[in-house]
Length: 388
Image (cartoon, rainbow, N blue to C red):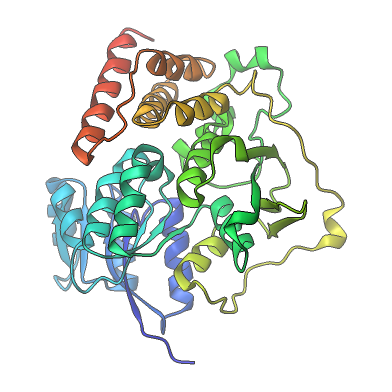
């Protein structure tokens, strides 16, 4: 079967998701052309990716790195810079699909611009929907574009819903590994080190998402994302701890039956599903061996120990711009922890304080969301400017 070759703009190509996405696309050269790549400051890896995939254009964060990159390549690839460069590549008429793998709030504006330009989206940046779910999903529907989740949990739900009547869905069940501190006493979280928090037992991810997994904020952000992707209220989206990370999420229906999507914890699988949807081309990834799996365990999340999860539910219930404040406060708190300026246990305190002082706005524009994000970050940094 022949396929029209898709031109892909990959935002965040040097991160964990970006690297995996390139490996997936390399397996299907007849289906995908890597047309544009973007990176923050990892010039060395981006240079290697340019040599291998020969994109038409790349975007790097600042002009100094752009100068170095232009000197290092042969000139066949256009080098653009910063936010203006991102907007340029995601709106080009040659692009068929934008895979957004940027980290955090940085993914919001490029995703919005791509939707405005009528591009299909493979979304690996959950913060885009956490911050601007109403705006993003509204514009996607108006533009008639396809927005497919790349997160393993939301990909699992999408797969479980194929062929089903959405009106029969009673509950979404997001699974969580529980992170490195699942069995640690809550009082011990005060003394957690940076190295301990970055030692995830199952997944290999970037620093920010690894810390979010350790606090369970990552699962809280996924609850908000699931609300916008699938249209269910917070009380119909549950979280269960599943340390083996074999079941990636489940859907419960009105008759009591449950569908689950299983697979090894390998991000290439949901990435491929988003890129090739609705097809399932053969791929060489390892398979689940049930004979050696031995057991699958499930636990209720400890919301007193992992306070970030109920804070995410609170922000979603508050609605409007509250999730944007949650996200901004969390991103700054994670940065402060990684810089050894606050304790691990202070992360939820900072987020709770930001939510306590916020009055949500319910019809925010893109500019409003950018302003609220900036104001929240400035407020958190000011309060903790003397923290050592």
